[in-house]
Image (cartoon, rainbow, N blue to C red; front, side, top):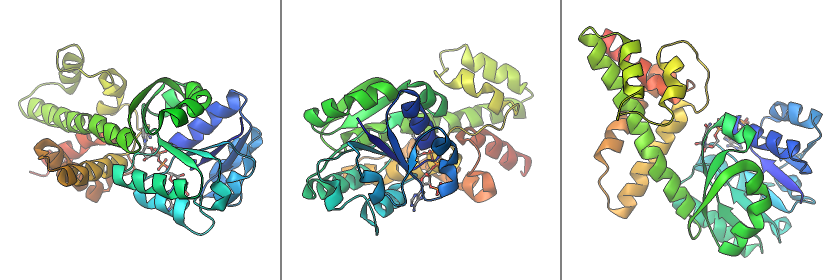
Length: 291
Ligand SMILES: NC(=O)c1ccc[n+]([C@@H]2O[C@H](COP(=O)([O-])OP(=O)(O)OC[C@H]3O[C@@H](n4cnc5c(N)ncnc54)[C@H](OP(=O)(O)O)[C@@H]3O)[C@@H](O)[C@H]2O)c1
C-alpha cells in the first residue's frame, strides 16, 4: 500500500517517519521543502506539489496547521482536489472545523475520491511510536480501507459517525484540555501568591483527584525545567477559536472555553504562541508579576 503524507510539521514528520519504519512506500510533500530532507534520506519520495504526491498512491494523509492551510493544500493550484484524486482515500488528520472537513469530503467525492477525518489525540512521541488515538468520521467502508495505515499509527480508532464527526469529537476532547492548563496556571498563581511552593502545588495536584493523565509529563515544563514544544500554544488558541465557532453554530454556550480563548489569545499576543501550550502557566505568572 503506497502512502503519501502531506504536511511535515511536528506531527506530520513524526507520522511519516513511523510509516517509513513500518515499511510503507512513502511520498511526502511540505510547503517548506527543507523539512522533508531527513525523510528523503530515509527513502521517502519528495513530491514537487501536493498533486504530484498523488502519483502512485493509494492513501493520502494530510496533517496541516489549520483550516486555511487545509484549503490551500486541497483546493489551491496543484492542490489535492483534482481529477488525479480519483480512487484515492484521504485521511485528514489535522484539527479542523467539522464544516471545513465536510466541505472537503464533498469536494473529493465529486472527484471520485474518498475521505475520512481522523484527527488525533496524542502528540509527537505517540505519533512516532504508533500510540495515537484516532477520532474518525466517515463511511465504515472507508475507515476499514484506512485500517492498515491507522493500525501503524494508533493504539485505537474511535468511529464517531459520518464525515466531520471525528473533527467534532476532537474539539470536544481539546476543550477540557485547554481549560485544564489554564486552571492549572491559575491554581499555581493563587498558591504562589499566598506563599506556597510551585513544586509542592503541582506534585500535589498530580497525586490528587484533580490530576490529569498528561499532567505528570508536563510537570518539568511547569517547573521551567524544559522548553520542549510538543503542541504549541498558538495551535491551542486556534482550537479554542474552532470550539467557539462550532459551539455558536450548534447554539451551545461555552463559558469556560470562551474564558480560555481570551487567556490563550493574550498569551499569543505576549509572544508565547510558539511555546508549548502549557506556557499558559508562564503567561499567568507574567501577568501576576505586572500587577
Ligand atoms: N503537535 C501536537 O501535539 C498535535 C497533537 C494533535 C493534533 N495536532 C494538530 O495537528 C495539526 C498539525 O500540528 P503540528 O503540531 O504538526 O503543526 P506544525 O508543526 O505547526 O506544522 C504545520 C504544518 O502545516 C503546514 N502549513 C501551514 N500553513 C500552510 C499553508 N498555507 N499551506 C501549506 N502548508 C501549510 C506547515 O508547513 P511549513 O513547514 O511550510 O510551515 C507544516 O507542515 C494541527 O491541526 C494541530 O492542531 C497537533
